[in-house]
Image (tube, rainbow over all chains, first blue to last red; front, side):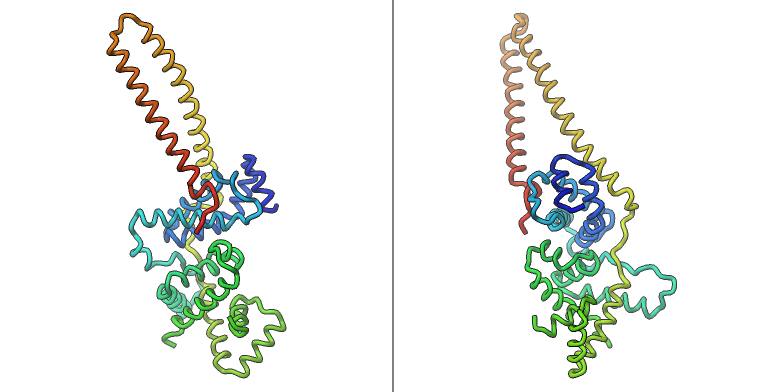
Length: 175
Length: 146
């Protein structure tokens, strides 16, 4: 079912419609929250708080607009405000909430490659790292990133190109 | 972004059309640096795909049920608050009425009690007004501006 139909129903207090919306976006919401909180437990809570706040404000939501970028902004603001309160910014800067996909057949060389990539990602500035995470790990489309960051799609493509270029430079540094 | 950069971006996303793929191949044949960069991009993409976000500590099946409980609790608190306000107002009013009409209670005690109740009422209205103002300007009640 289309998001706008679900939102219209949710505006009338239809919890089943909201459940469908939550189930559609919960993984993306969690992954976005994870990037900003760097912690699975906080990401779970913050993404749920995002859905609760979205539910509270849904009556004022413009149905013509896409739902996810609105939710993304709520989650991001919530995570960053908690982040500041906790004053753990420096500590969290040096950590990325990604891990290797478990594979028993994975050889040492591949393990080294992923380690190298994680190190390369940490060397990028925040803007570049964020856009790479949103595209490749939160699995947002160009359109979703563009709406979430409130930037034209062309700017997102360009930013992503330069972010990947910088990442490639860091990744291939020792080769 | 120039054409070459656009093609490289699409190559990374594995989103090239057949025509674009041939165009990029022609560019790579002409320029060895482009060919080298494409190989490096393949390697990088492979490494990116070997990583994934850290899983949540709970099962995804629990997500909606725990969220629903939180939402329900919120609604429960609102209903409880309304009920408590109405009940307290009613019994409070009855109590004050009887107190004022009671000739055995001294006048200063009656004045003191009325002042106490009036103070609580003013504080309540003040907090309520603050909450309403906050709700109107709350970043979550309308679209969040970045």
